[in-house]
Length: 406
Image (cartoon, rainbow, N blue to C red):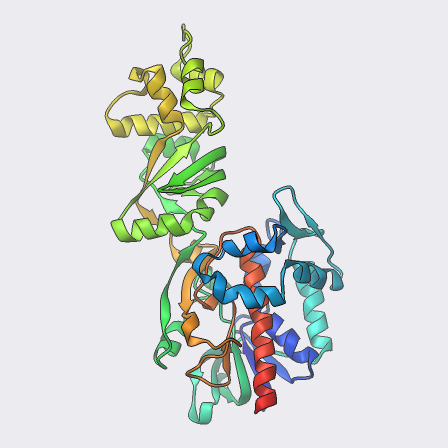
């Protein structure tokens, strides 16, 4: 019998295991995959964004309505603590120009290797290829393995099974039905930080797939974000899209579509643009004229052509004032949300009302939950990993308090 079973070997589960082992608890980490941190390694492929350097009050606003539920955990393990933790593992961090925090190695694998070595040295055991399938008699944990079904007992359990994005890396949302059957309220898992589908014309799709939109402003309703986006074969994605993904997703799910407004030159007002476009075009093509007069990229001009086609008018018939208005208010109709399997993260999960202030499930004494399986979401930029680490640490502390009382 192990003292504590941690189910899930991602950042939240490993952090819970570390907190527990450092206090002398006997810990076994179970995971369905053949090795730890599969999604963590994927997150580090383009440079591991651990956290963000902005002041904590502003940082917390990124979690929207879940911020009050996460505040105590992040206060106890804030971004500075995460940076110090990384440095103690031999991976010092730096702040990028955007304020994002990265390890100097700029990837996840060295940090994960050092972490696993430290966990091993502290006595943490690992049981891979163990898929949790529920509880049996007397609360025994049941696992499906290549050698058949196995069970074990534990005085306390930390569930850190992630959401449902990138299921091939281990987070497939299979825990939802098991917990719901025990009366746990769970908000439906939905894509977060995801792309969206757009019915591009064949000409636009073939020419501009994979092209970036740089320095644009994206707007839906009262929400505007400046940044970059990427045209995909089936739609649009990228950092600025991810920052608006909650509003865009809810609009698509509620109405069946959403109108995203794109400003190609947000630093210029309509009057300034109209003045630039009032010159004589001469023998230039319209595309060349727009490129030179308004410094528009080919993909931006392509978006204007798409909007003109949708309006039933050729772009060449637009007056300078109409072109100026269109440049900073191109309507793009989003027809759907990209599949959850391709989303960076998921929204939804275990309702915070189901947890006490130590992250224990009220209906399942001795069972704690942490990480992305809880009902919160955040944009990319370090906020996802920060909350996963912080709630994992909080669940570990909660288990220690539970064991002390028991």
